[in-house]
Length: 470
Image (tube, rainbow, N blue to C red; front, side):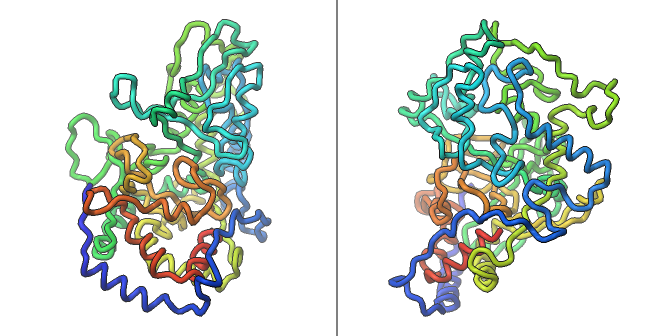
């Protein structure tokens, strides 16, 4: 995972870039670039989907499935329906709500009200705030010092009238925070997820190998997340599980498919067992209190849209969800956005945030051979000690994260895996940490150096305007 920057190439590129982009007459003494902030939701012109809308081109039957699936995605579960006994929230859309169902963490954190709803007796952990991001918590280490990495759900069903015999305690988050043993994750937006699911592995691998000299000069490597069974040896560069394919969903690209992504989230975030995760995460006697049978998935159902299970509906909703539509002129105007797009490419951001892929053939015409303007290579990259979270997933180590897709960024509130900032400039700076000499350099160090030192404040503003236009 170590890399060696090529100093001559770096210096040559730096000098060339300096001459190319020091062209503005507005000095930093009179102007300082600022994050334009969350782009206001404005209805898109006819024919362009708004956030939360379905993909264009779905058949009538597919639209029916989408609508039913969206309703399930937005529905709340109760204790009598299987919620808990440990959970972070009671619905998918509670986490994925900004700027619409399928998005990211909303401005007002629903976990605050949920903690004591339904007579629950939960206290609010110190890292959860009314205006902060929805978060899940993971412990880095077990009490004996061995690696943990698992999600420790924030809340329990203790106190609910539907669970009179359940007296679970919340995890000791105060001690975990004090001992620097807890890290956080925020929801990833799932707009356009069906398009991402259909990108061929061969395209991801080919893109990984493209522009090799430029990437080497920038210190960029990146690789698909691979989870090989046992000591299996594969002739392929990086593969998922036993099936020989690249994973692509989650902060560390740890999930292969939207169905797996759904099933895991239903079990981990809401505590609901399902077809993929059949056993409870907490099997404490007295806390297994489902009283309302779940008839979803019953093959005797008379309505075809009622046949899929909940997790299949979650996956269908995400699969048929339209991608974000960029703004042609907000913020800053079309000229500024156009300049920013060119700067984004020129300083090397595109070497990880690949602007576009194309899907392969699909039985769903709306997903077949379509452009995917996601601005991600779907690879995991070493992001240095600054973003180190102490957690490994698959072959993604504690410093490695999937390149976050940037489409829809203009309407996101919180950034980075733990939601530590709402300022896009801070998020950019946080990409840089470590050093080559220490052997822990972030793969983004050189690109961030270019941003800091080779762009005027006006050009930084153009770049920020471009990012917020996505």
